[in-house]
Length: 262
Image (cartoon, rainbow, N blue to C red; front, side, top):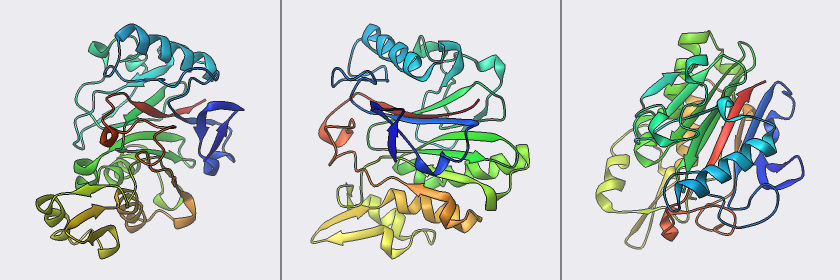
């Protein structure tokens, strides 16, 4: 990942640099214009007015308008929505207008910026250069267990004819494998699923840890995505708590990742 257009409060994925037709970004705690450390994009952990001001600042920094954004109400499942112009602006000004109860947004329409919000969960962005389609995925622990990122890739193939071998995947900042401690019951559920290899579930003393980013990476490569077409952020949101909001640090605010076909 690298700084977006010299704006210290935004990152972008390096792997998408060769595709000027795609806008992508990840926000941080810092306002894109360089002031403040509470750039909350969600409607929790602050007032609605502050959130809206932050979203307007983000739109300005990206050269977009509110109607370019599409935001979902995330529920830690694998529900999806194929986004069209009818969804333009959903969820930007008020949470009541957000796309309801989904964790996958996908589209082949231009100028619709798909948003996924996070504070330790893994944001995943997909781009299909062969058919010009994109997806934004919220992959927390439950979503990762369900294979939500791989489901999004399958949906891109089924609905738009995307080729897995050409698909680009961006696995964003999330809680890292050294920090994501879970209880035995949770770890056991993952242990019992043959999709998850030993290198994604570890035990240190009496503590269990999950590596969600590698689980997502493995799901995508098992599906047919090429290793070299996947960028996996090394940022751990709990460790990098000066940059990103972290629920494990007790924070209710959210950063976001977005992708849009220009």
